[in-house]
Amino acid sequence: MFDFSGKVAIVTGASRGIGRGIAEVLGARGAQVIAGARGDNAAGTVEAIRQAGGKADTVAIDVTDVASIEAMVEGVLTRHGRVDVLVNNAGITRDQLTLRLKREDWDEVIATNLTSAFTCVQAVLKPMIKQRAGRIVSISSVVGQMGNAGQANYAASKAGLIGFSMALAREVASRNITVNVVAPGMIDTDMTRAVAGKAQSDWEALIPLKRLGTPQDVAAAVCFLASDEAAYITGQVVAVNGGMYM
Image: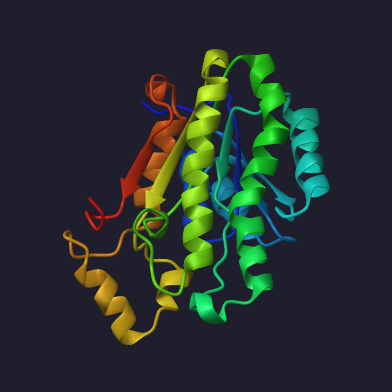
């Protein structure tokens, strides 16, 4: 089950946290993983995959730069001849109450979290259509579903991923390409560890399962949606949040 042997999977934001978890699980299940991140930040991810017996390459990308994304996909096609899976995971936060939110912080979050997914999708669609097969999974957030004070830019970007994915799913379904979203809740990563004291406790109190999730919890959902077993699932949002948002 969930065998990715012979398949090529691109994961953006693969240097740490959820992205690294997704890349490692795909690699463990046989995929040729392309771990995208700024500079050589994904080198540790690639090394971990290789040490575990998997196949992975790192690629330096700036997801806000169209030329960078197009060059990455062209390089993947030159080396491997196909792209089977795209996981849009790259994301940042620039939190502030809306009244005080700087325009540049709004623009940067939208560009990194939402527009980059559009750019990556445009770059992989032609080879996927030619193959008449593909899996696109974007990582949204519970914040994109329920909102959170001080994160208007982040919430907008993550909610936008959901709408974008549903529209895209309708466009490409006839080409045997599925498009889905995974919406994590509070996951134990560097980002959530940076949440101080009481704020984090308040979030944890909202989780019926009474624990933070792990990157592997998210990776499991992504692997399912990217697998052959999920061939009849498209345009869906899978919540991995411990019951935080029902």
